[in-house]
Every structure is written in structure tokens, then in C-alpha cells.
Length: 264
Image (cartoon, rainbow, N blue to C red; front, top):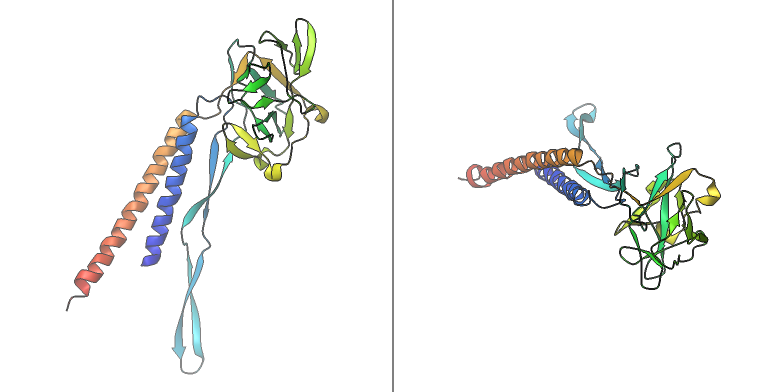
């Protein structure tokens, strides 16, 4: 009977974690460049049940009963790297990446955090700091094609579709782009940033000859489907509730076994 308690409890934990993930998606529905997380559910290894009986001539004979599932858990969360819609802001420091629809990989802006580590983001909501460096909203430096910081004289600059930055008609720099052939290898680190394991770096997108476009004055919106997310939240809640009722039924049965059946 206790196996049923564990199975129901594992189902409740899995649905609670899925709900937390969906709530996080919903809270970031208005975050530029945010990629919605998807959950991967997996069952624990099944147990093969059998029973033994005695036979006077043949000895013990094993009879197969069947398999028994032992619960479920949320194995991992994987970001959905589909292109979000573009929203016009008319802000010259806002940049959006338009991926090549024929490419299976994804492009990212490389940035340098306060610790000097290279990370990647799709959030092009940039600004210019007091020293003239192009940075993210949280202060990470936006990098050029050579991995250096981009410095401009003001916010009055232009970025063409290839990423070239010009100011007063003069070429200044080129916005860096990194290419992830398999974006599922990227790990979320918070604040819309991604990294590779062991601090590995993605290759330069310009050297890969991959079609893309950078649009100035636009931001890529989150790809969270709010309607579907709300539907998934209701489904997760109902599953949690069903497992809860199973747990209560087992608890009631155990209570009767102890308090009523055990009476003399």
C-alpha cells in the first residue's frame, strides 16, 4: 500500500514543479527575448512483479504478475527557441535579431558580465552607459565581432541589417553575433542570459555564412503563448488535485487499518 503513497506523492511534486515553471513563463511574457521553458516528464523505472508457489514435484514455480510504475518526475526544462514577434520601439539602442527560417540553429548577442565571462542573450534592449559603451539593461557589455566592447559617442547611431554601426556617417563597429547550431545545449543563467557548459564559447555567426538580419528600433518579444500557458496551468493543477485525492484515500485506508482492523 505504501507504494501507492509514494507514486501519488511523486505525481504531486512533479505537477508542482511544472506549475512553478509555467508561472515563471507567464511572469516573463512581457520580457523582450525571453524563451519559454518546456517540461520533460519521465516515469521512474518500473518494477516487475511476480509470485512464487510450491509444487511437490517441480519445486518452486515463478508466475509473472506484471509491471508496476513507481511514480513520475520532471526530468528537465528546455527553452523553446522559436522566433518571437518583433515590436517596434523607435529606440535606436534597441536591436532585434531576425533568424533565417531555413536554419535550424539560433543567433545570440554575445555579452560580457561583471566577472568577464562571455554569455549570450536574445534581449536586445540595450543602452549606452556613462562611458559610451553599449550595454544591456543590467550593465553587461555588448561585444563586437572580435569579442571587444562596443563604444559609441552617443545614442544617435545607426545599425544596418548586417550589424554595422555608423555614427555621423562614419563606421564605428559591428555588433557581434554568436551562432548556436544546437541551442538546446545552452543553459539559462538568469536575467535572459545563456551559457555553455565549462564556459565554452559559441562560434562567430559572421564566419558561418548564415543568413540573418538585425533590425534597429525593434525588440523581439517573448515567445510565451499566454493562452496555452494558462491552459497548461489548469491541467497541472487538476493533475495535482487528482494525486492529492489518491493520497488522501490511501491515508484514510491506513487509518482504518490501524484504528479499526487492529482492534481486539
